[in-house]
Image (cartoon, rainbow, N blue to C red):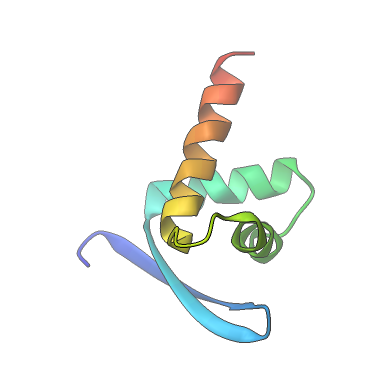
Length: 74
């Protein structure tokens, strides 16, 4: 997992870990701040809304990508 940063969260009553590149963690922190959420809150919201079978790390990367595309288009 070279280049990945692993963080642990409590989601729906259980602990889980997510490994992402530092750039994604930075982007997610900015998104959470812009939405008035904590990073943990953003992760929990994304976890609850993701499609069945989609890994949480994938859902978080897609969120960061979609947000970047949205803000680039403004």
